Length: 160
Length: 284
Image (cartoon, rainbow over the protein chains, first blue to last red):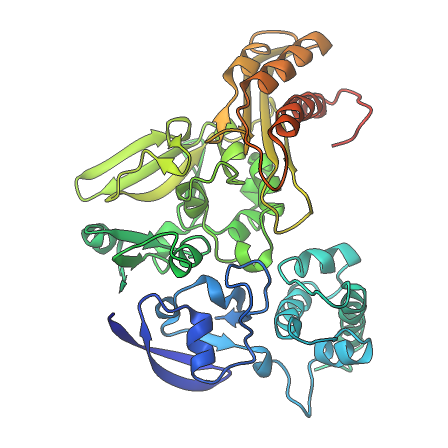
């Protein structure tokens, strides 16, 4: 198997790593410590591995790591910090939108881009925006409530 | 597996040999490789070939670059207004995370019987532009799918664009994806219809079906029930029956073959009425 040297900028940090040609971006990110990007279905069905690739939300399991060479990657850890949470993160806690938490990193990524593109989403907009993210615990109700509340928070100007 | 990023179309074509496969969005190919469904010696990455990512009007037609993403379709005013069945199919396509990466060409090259974009492209007389080191050729989409997951594209050929006929003033159309949920679902049946009307007479009729045979296809017998006629209830019933007769579906986890076959008739009837603005008891 051939190895390839690639460069990524993950959450603002430059990373150089060797990857196999058929290694997925998801597996490569986890191998170098970004385990907040969750490995679940590896088939694009669940969205637990969602990251921003040059600002676009994608499933990290559905691309070869080598395809991402030179790209900026943002994981859930690059969206808000423990001291300064993104409104989506704050409201997921507030509304009880997190149970086991496994889907949460992907939900945060999808919800963040949804609000960036559409600051006043309807319930259907939120459902469609999170359509690629499965949650097996919450039944989605509290997640949708959290995203609605985060939108209100952003629009009232007390979010980041 | 060897990995090679192509910096140009020519470089991609030169690398397309010895068990190579092109990879664009990767949404089909990557899990196929990961789970051993496909063995490839070399992946030729074409995802950065921006010259293949466009949606434009050219010579009265719509040209969609092979690497236009499904999200690009949704963001295109041209697609929304002049190819609305394609726009609607993009809305029902997987979820945002997949739509951002999945390319139009990839959905066709994967050659799933349930490829969401195939029925709407078929009814707008899509022609695919293929290139290889030997030159270029144009292939009608109606001749593209040969059998289950088998296309007429040769291994060394690269799809560059998909050209469709825009829907003009006279175009009446409708699309429906029958699915078990509203997102991330493989179609149970996909149907697209386009009627080109000259006054009250149907000059051209196009009806396509997906997920009900080994390949997505144009239901020509159903189209013949409408072409050159003033369309009333009798013509619609005949077309619906012909569409149902044409289906050769399978039983699978999503639906039985019998159900799929029956739904071909039901959906063609409903979509024809919808396209023509005729009253019907059930909205689609």
